[in-house]
Length: 409
Image (cartoon, rainbow, N blue to C red):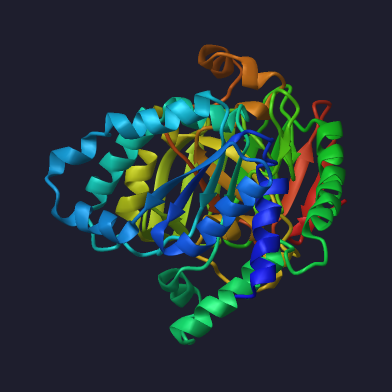
C-alpha cells in the first residue's frame, strides 16, 4: 500500500480519531498481523507529541488454539495483570486506539460455551475500563486495516494479495483518506451529521416505529431527556474525538422497558469469531422473549443470556441506506463497517452519554431513568431499502424519520 496514504491514515487517527494531546499516553490494541501499520501509527503518535505509546498485541490464531485445547475452567478466569494493564492506563487518562480486523469465522468450530465464558470473565474484570470509555472519560477510536483471512472472506473470488489490496482501497475510501485533506474532509462530514442531530434533538421523539418487508414491526420508546449523538464526541473536559472510523450513524438509547414487537436482522453479525445469520428478536416490555437464527442460534443464545441486561437493548442508531459503505454493495463481515451501512440496534449496555448528564450519574440513578446496563454491547444491523421509521412526539404528532430506507428530512 502507498506509504503516503498510510501516513495520512495514521495522522487522521491520531489527530481526528483520538485527538491526542501533547504528553498523553496512547495505548494501541492491535492484532499481530497488523504490526507494520501499528508501528507506523506509534511513530506518528510520537511525532505528534505522545508521552509514550504502549502496544497490546493480540494473536487470534493462538486464541483458537487456547479455546480448543485449554482446560475448561481457565475460561472463567481473567489474569490480574491484564486487568491492571487496562485500569492503570485508563485511570491516568490515556487515549486508546483499537484495530478491528479479525477473521469472521475463526472460531466456528470452537465450543461456543468456552468463548462465552471467556467473554464474560473479560467483561466483568474490565468493567471500569469499559464504563470509562462508554462515558467518554477517555478519548478512544476503533479503526481497521485488512488482514489476509478477513480480506478473503470479503472477496473470496480474488487471490489473497488481490483481496487485501481491494480491501485496503475500500477502507481508505470510506474513512476519507483518499481525499486531499482527510482531517478537513472529516470536519465537513461532522457538520453534515450535526444537521441530523439537530432535527432529532429538536423533536425529542417519545417513540419510534420501525417497519419493513423483512418482518420488522417494532416500537421503541425513548427515555425523557435522551440525546442523539454522532460524528464526534467530547470528554467531560471538552476534548473532541471520533470513536469510530468510519462512522455514518447518529445514535441514542432506548428506554430499557419500552420496546415491543419484532425486529429482523438485515446482515450477518460477526460475534467472537462466529457468524450469526438471518436472525430475529421478539421483545415485550423491552425484554427479548424469543429469538431465532438460521445460523448461529447457539451463539446468539449465549450472547442474550450473558447477564440480566443482555436480554434488553442499549442503542438505537440511524444510518441511511444511501450512504458510502452501503453503496459499495460490500458485506464486510465486520461490525465497524456493516453498522455504518445500516440502521442498527445494540444488545446490552447503553451509552450513559446519551441521556442528559448521564456520564456523571451512578448506576442506580441511570437505571432509574431507564438506561440499560450489561457486560455486553453488540450492534446488529436491521436497515433495508424499504425501512420506514415514524417518530411520535410527546404531544402525539407523527413525523416521518425514514422513508424507503433513507432520512425523510
